[in-house]
Length: 494
Figure 1 (cartoon, rainbow, N blue to C red):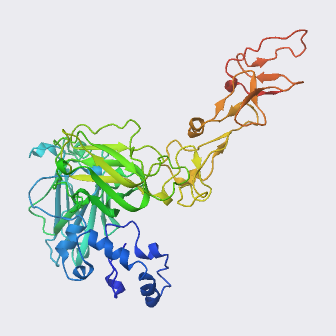
Figure 2 (figure 1 turned 90 degrees about the vertical axis):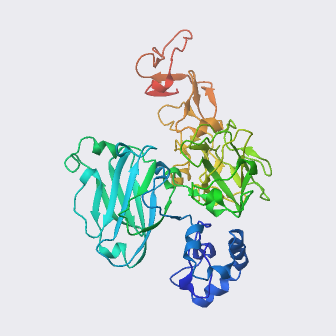
Figure 3 (figure 1 turned 180 degrees about the vertical axis):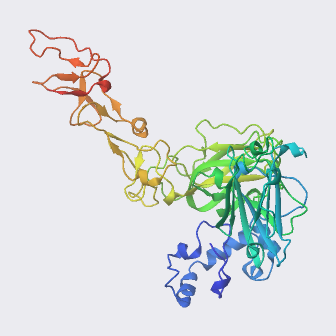
């Protein structure tokens, strides 16, 4: 979603939408005319106006130069110099907005820590970016020269990512990679410091030498498994009118007394998981439960939950526990227009809720299902995901894998050993086939093991007891003693 103005160059992206308005309207950027765009936009002007009002801002107010308000709405937090802030790099990368004029002393300085107390021994490392720095890694900090133009001449967005378990740092500037470095013993020879970069970052601090950083925020991509953060696309959060639960600021909390909190969307979403965050690493996050509800007019193909019925996100309907954060991984094939966060008497305060998933039309089919078009669900009846046919199974081990793998099911191979089948959904969810016990085989029915037809008998060859019949010419019947037909080299009827 974008703000719409009569000046196309003024359109700027909203956090509340997964697609920009060109994609939403099906327009081609390269060929659409200004007049055609403005004509097509009239059909969604009301929707966009409502989107702005739900965020507490009228469209005419956005036309004014209000940078601070824009930054706050997009989750940016003013940089506090020389003050440690909670920031879990396992939950997402660090984005920094810089704005500076030309100067030889333009610098970005960020210290990373794994502990809660101010102690240099808990420092994971330091990243310093500037235009005139020594090419060194003193104290195993990353001191790296960037072209002056990258830190001046307007607003820049830097993104720093740290890889737990690997002493590797990557930096992007406005989407372009400018640094990718892995520390070596030769470059980082101070005792123990290299190992510090292997630690999990839990806190950050902008150094007093930092002259360029103005705002910071967190991307939560690491936790999303390729899905989207749907919290920012909500039409409304009931009982959180200020949107504190989706503003990416862990410093602000919402009282549990205001629960339940209901995240609502205009269109159904596929819900993969829900992550709850407390205000600090030591704060309790216990006592919350998550439910989904689909208020759509018609149930979708392969949708697990019924319409207008609150269903627990997790199969066991468990409550959150512990401190810092808690992750609810939902059941497969859950569709929702509402995600409801409910608490109890002992529930801790909430600072952030990240609903992870995709729009239903781009949400992958569950295990044991397929869609020949794109491997995803559909809002159109008869065009959604279908159960794999008998005698076939899912090629995936996790439904979050590439949807391309869900465009077809894998057939059981009975070319040599005619014993492999699938019948139930539980069979088809696995990335392998079941095998018939002796003396049964698979014939016409790909999901049912049967005995050989009249005039034929069970035949198995291979090692161990895969040798039946040992002597084809027999005066009387003999017992079939094949223990595991799947280990044989040939199984058929002859």
